[in-house]
Length: 159
Image 1 (tube, rainbow, N blue to C red):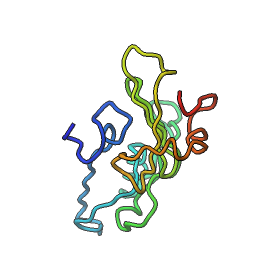
Image 2: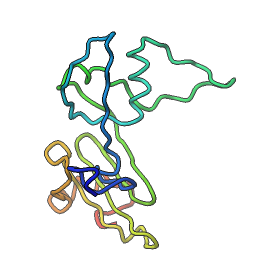
Image 3: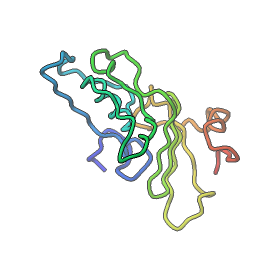
């Protein structure tokens, strides 16, 4: 699990260690901030619209004889030059091998799903990613109303 330090858990999990990866960019022809870290949340779906904007390219309207699929992500070019620019906008759902997560703004709910168990037995956790990016302090018991709003309809904080 140290390969994803300081983030919790490891690949295939919905916790941050399962889906956080470094992203490095170098573009000599374009002035970007140099050697600076960014902490904004960016999702993989944001890469395509970001690269299109950086390249000054238009997205094709058709692909293989049919209309192109809708772009889900949004360009995050502003984050490359401004550490205060907003990152990904919109909700994100994560699932891998039954482990699930849902992020809205800075809040994220996650659960680890042990194999061969009922999904209804999973315990959900709640984290404020702006103050706890390593997911150490589970706030599900502190904010049960927020937890209930973030979980899928028909679910409770314990399922």
